[in-house]
Amino acid sequence: MSDRIERELWLPVPREAVWAAITGDGWLADRVRLDLRPGGDAEFESDGRVRTGWVEDVCAPERLCFWWAEDDEPASRVELVVEEQDDTTRLRVVETRPLEVLDLVGMPLPGAAGRTFGPALVAA
Amino acid sequence: MSTPSSDDRAGAVFGALSDPTRRALLSAIAEHPAATATELASELPISRQAVLKHLGALTDAGLLERRRAGREVRYEFTPAPLSDAVDWMTAVGAEWDDRLAVLRRRLANPAGDRRGATSGAGGRGTARPSRRSAGTPAPPPSHRRSSPGAG
Image 1 (cartoon, rainbow over the protein chains, first blue to last red):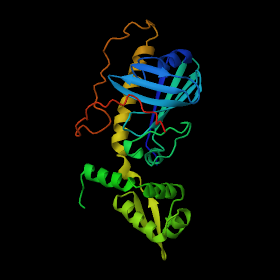
Image 2 (cartoon, rainbow over the protein chains, first blue to last red):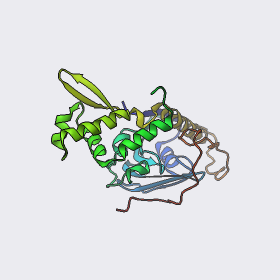
Image 3 (cartoon, rainbow over the protein chains, first blue to last red):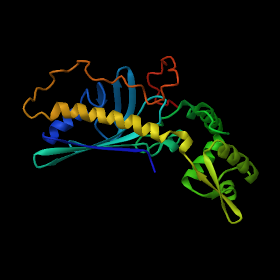
Image 4 (tube, rainbow over the protein chains, first blue to last red):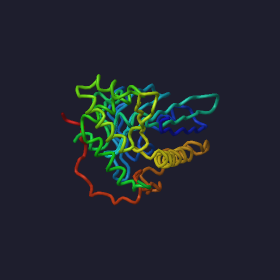
């Protein structure tokens, strides 16, 4: 039983338009820097809050999977799936914190290339 | 121990996790659920006696649960104290609801595809408190811009 959020939205535009909107500035955060390749760095800044993370997997314009965390928080995993059906596009969002526990005890997260996120106590 | 404050609870958890042996123990139990002290002692370079002592500290912090199975006592990992799942679901769920509403406003209007018209306007109400509970005073901003774990 991991913490999990799921949402879905239908939009009357082609999936390329959805992809551009969800990976660009002003949606995931005011300023979005995404290195769109597996293992690529990610940074999200909104109102002075900065989240950092990395890209686990990407397949434009269909699927983006990344991890993010603020300094003192455990990392969570976000999966965005964009699917075109007839004249509409479905965006599915899943955010999970499946490995919070392993994160907290200092174990590496998948795709993180040895990086760990989480409370500073882990580093102590 | 009736309704300890979340600060007390967090203190106990962090105290329990401050010891590297206990962290190793916790990792071992997370990987092998329902382990016994004997099994754990065989995996770690410490005595069964020492394992029992650390298991006690972790259990007191609410990170482990003891289950009796016949003559054995088995330990289960209980991650609840590490996070308040409900808080997280509420805060993160609200964030996504906001984001999806923004996206719908932007893209669900087939007539007006005026892209970038409001770029930079501070119209989005993102003044929600951070995911941490609003009761804890925010620490002064740290200067750790990014600490990619050098080392």
